[in-house]
Image: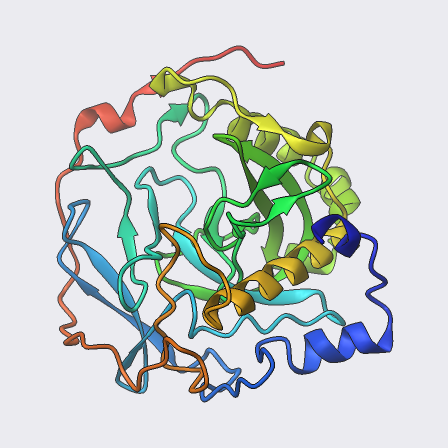
Length: 322
C-alpha cells in the first residue's frame, strides 16, 4: 500500500534496478519510444483561450500522448525526471493535459462551457511557478491511501518548477526533484512536486527541500499559501494539506513518484476499473489493451492564434497573509 511505500529503502539494489533501468516498462511491456525527448516537438490547433484549442506532442511526424507516450525518465541517482509544462509562470489560463481525449493534448479547462482562468492573489499574477505534470504517473482515484484515508485525484502528478526562466506551454524539460507538498483538493489527495530545471544555475545549489528554504527564502511558504488560498476568489473555502502542510523531503518524494508510476502501470495495463478514468490509448506499449500504431488525428500545425482575454482576468484579489 502507499503508506508502506513511504518507508521503502530506495538505496536497495532491487529498487534501483526496477526504477532506473526499467521504470517505464510494466511487466510484459516493451516501449517502442526512445527514452530521449529531444525529438519531441509540439503542434497547436484552434485558438488559444477558446474551447477548441489543443496542443499536441509530436515525435517523428506522429502524435504522441503527453500522458502515456512521453517517457518519464525517472533517474534516482541524479534525482531527475521529465516534466511537461502546462502553465507558464505568471499566466492565468488553466491549461492541463486532457486525460480523456485521444492523444492527450493540452487543452484549457472548461467549466459551464467557458474556459477557466485562475485568479490573481495579490501580489502574484496567475500561477507563481512553471506548473505542469510528470508523464507516465497517475494518482489513482480507486485506491485509498490508508495513512491519510484519501483517494488520488485521477490526474498525473503535478509539478511546480521553481527555476529562473518562464517556460512555454507544451515545453518538455528535465527537472531535479527536491520535495513535495500534499494538498487535499476537494477531498482528494493532490501531490505538488517541487522541482527545478536542471539547466537552471540555481539547480547546482539545491539538493533537497531544505536547500530551497535556505536559498529561496519565502518561496515554499508562499507556495503553500497560494495553494491554500487560490480558490477563495471563487467563493470556495481554503484548501487543506496532509501532514499539517509540512513539505516532504527528496527521498520521500521519490517514493511518492514511484507509487504513482506503479499506479500508471496498472492503469495502462487495463487492471484498474472505475468510472471517468483516463483513456489508456497509447502508441508506445504494444502489449497493452489501449495500444494503437497511431492516433486517428490529422496533424495540422496552425500558427498560434490567441483570443482576447477579458479584462476581469487581470483583476487583483486581496486576502490576509498569515
